Length: 364
Ligand code: SF4
Figure (cartoon, rainbow, N blue to C red):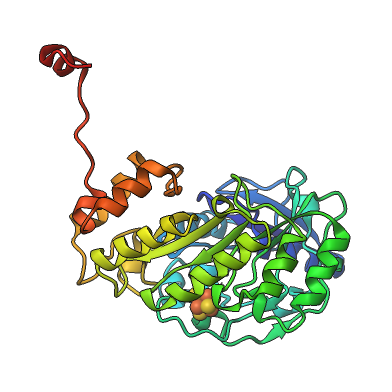
């Protein structure tokens, strides 16, 4: 049969991995496949349509795609992140079948990268699930506790690709992480631990072994960590020290700093200040619940400890004082945060002087 794989018209940096795996699965069965973006007429009439989905707030283009492809009179399956997190809402799209969770039969197959010839990175899961139980995280809901761990990922690296992108939720929980790191050294390709590394699991040995790899997460970043609550401060600080000692400098470490969850603006300000003082790059992460109704609209949730104005203040500061949405630890920013007594002082932007005002005041 001919299988049509549809990635709805939303923005994504990465190719639709689930669809590429489905393509590999169907080709093994002797079927033909075709990948399209958005609502387009396929080259050949399909016998089945798979529509994928991503962020819950990007549900509208998913519904549009389902509606469009229903016209072919064949089964339309809807899977992916949004369908797995909000299956009842996804069912209202009109899809014939909602597929939640992973398609296990395709899990260990090489994705069909021939459908995205311009793409140069192999996306790999060496493990699934996570034993953490962070209350803001969707991973325990989606994948549960650590439930699979590979000893080798070599068979998932596509010939000609220049980098390996790990989508593991917590790769350092994989009991075979040493074997995987050895393999990465041997493969000698760029490595991106895309979902970040668990700071509490970064020991001197881990840091040393990381420094042996060709780490490259883009824009000069080599390692991503997370500083979600004040309690995690000591492990984040220690991880940064170990990484520095192993030769990974602070500016190559990005620390995701959650806000708008159970924290307060003051708590968030102190964590941002910590990260800058530890010499790393701070990337604020706006908490968004994966439950209704907030899941359907990006940045729609305001926690009881924050106001909409304070949240917007963070976003403005990121645009004006930050670089690409992050706060690098440069001396000006460090001074501002170290001199500030509270959130308001740290995130307040100085009014811009206009040309006219400068002339009138006789100042430069
Ligand atoms: S350690 Fe990471 S992946 Fe695991 S539950 Fe916490 S935030 Fe989620």
